[in-house]
Image 1 (spheres, helix red, strand yellow):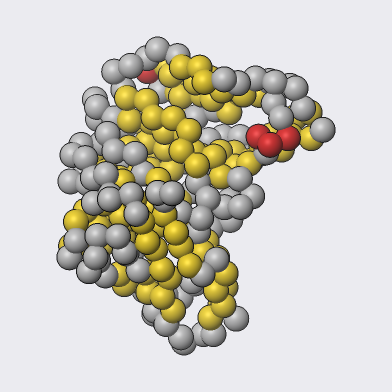
Image 2 (tube, chains in turn brown, purple):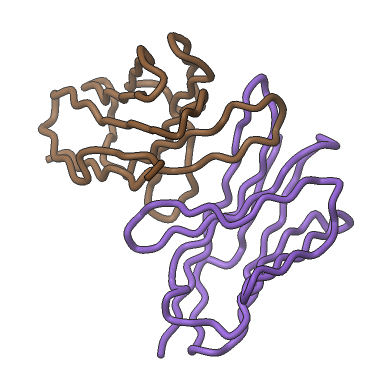
Length: 115
Length: 115
């Protein structure tokens, strides 16, 4: 089955630790995205990548880092510099069509809690 | 700047009632796309529909229908004969092209369908 997987489903972090959230897709999509969701809010874009070995900051990139070494993988590291990391993190991917016509498909999410 | 407003924070209905979720958007682009996603309690965002700005025809898919009105910048979503399985948070999103496809999300409407 084609789809997007995220792991782990739940993650607990102590203050001062870096943690890495995994996102893998087997849809052969070029573009991948990371979003953060806080209670009662919409999704906010952290980072995006349109192609392997390239990625760009989104609206709230501070305290986060990413890599895109393989087409199917786009891991997100939440660093100790992120002041309020407790949130639900969603990864998405899309074909990578030019223009606004692309459709993004989402993974099941990772819920990160800072203890 | 692009903006999506979902004024209804939470709606409660009884099974078999019809319900309409409102979505109002702001954009200066002439070409754009609108989306609806469903987020069930499991957390994954499920794609429901994509509509481009040049197609104002209403769309029906089973019990779901969408009404796109450019004159009022609205893209409302109606569920006919609601069911308990429709309980979820529904997000409306606007797509704009900024060198990549950026989705601007509303804050979501939580729909509770009781038996």
